[in-house]
Image (cartoon, rainbow, N blue to C red):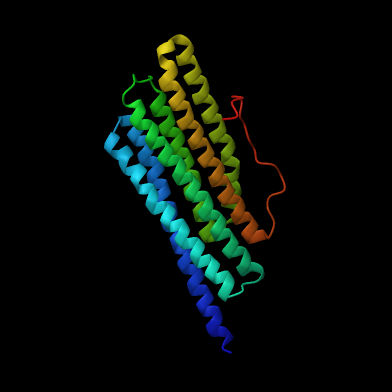
Length: 233
């Protein structure tokens, strides 16, 4: 049996799966930024494209899982190779969930476009989305480069995202207290902000998978979280 040939085939198959992960990550990043832009500019057509584009993200996750299942069944990877395959599947799952949040944001944008605007709120949410997308970009870069330091930096930044979310929550609460007519749109905006904050959690999960992949162990310390809203949403 030609061991070198088998290893080469495994590496090729794994690289193909990893390429799909990066493609999936790019689609998710675009969906999140587009959803935030659609909200800020009230662009219903762009929001509709985000919603329909989620099917491509879902299809990529299915393709990645199928390829990884084949790798596990036919190649029988062990140790580091097995960790890599499992990490690929977990990252794909995190990206698929992040794509769902982008789609949910776009759905609420269509509703909000028929409501009165809440001054400054959509701009704050757009800034939150940009921060979270940067986390996701860096987490995927850390995976490709096997960069534990960058992964740890992404993990720490989740605290900053929490603080931004808390600030938006307080901003929306103020608007609702000042004018009851703001309650409806502010509730939708809050759910959008919470969805983005949860994408930050998934970016953090990707970063933690990178740490696991390189070191063989998940981080022992608890995630740095700051949630002063008490919503539990």
